[in-house]
Image 1 (cartoon, rainbow, N blue to C red):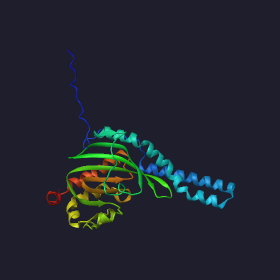
Image 2 (cartoon, rainbow, N blue to C red):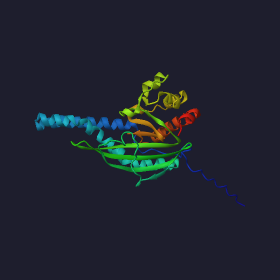
Image 3 (spheres, rainbow, N blue to C red):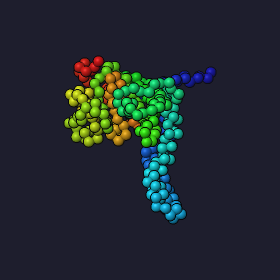
Image 4 (cartoon, rainbow, N blue to C red):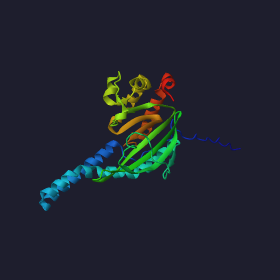
Length: 274
């Protein structure tokens, strides 16, 4: 008789064992090309438009807004594709995506969550899952800045790991917070050139970020000081980013957080953990 082949059930995807995913968000190179093409088109339109107006003031005003028009198409593309990309990434990693979350806005005492002039703080999209041994979560956070002259909209993509114990504050990346402490210099010159670490307790910072962690972060080639700040706040290890839209970038940010969390030595947990 006929023999039926045994059925194989594929295991559920996880962050460590992700299912295949094809990104729909343009790569940084393609986004740059789109911006440059838009810039060329806007400049060409200005060259053709100036002789018609014959007004210097209006021409200068148009020229001043050229960079804003150049980045507009790429920004629209990223905004439209952000949620579909999150659906693909969450399905490939076993995360749960909530597109209409009732989560409250983050209340951490760190920028941008503690900006006094911020209004209409919202969590537009949320996600949770597991990265290594840590519960993981994500929010797309938006707010309005009201400086009495104009109102502007802002956003951050926030990626977080929940640690087993609370630890002292530490920041990797740009900061304007006076409570962040002073800059900590490490033995790695390459790390000091690419990353800015601030912490009130230099001994804790050097203990929590051993050489193996520095090497792991450098090997990922993350542009943290450009558009992402990593913050340790109590039991929360956060990556606060303007980027993190493409699936590969989301994975890299979570991997950077996992490298930091896994690299904290036992004696640091014993001495500083609460």
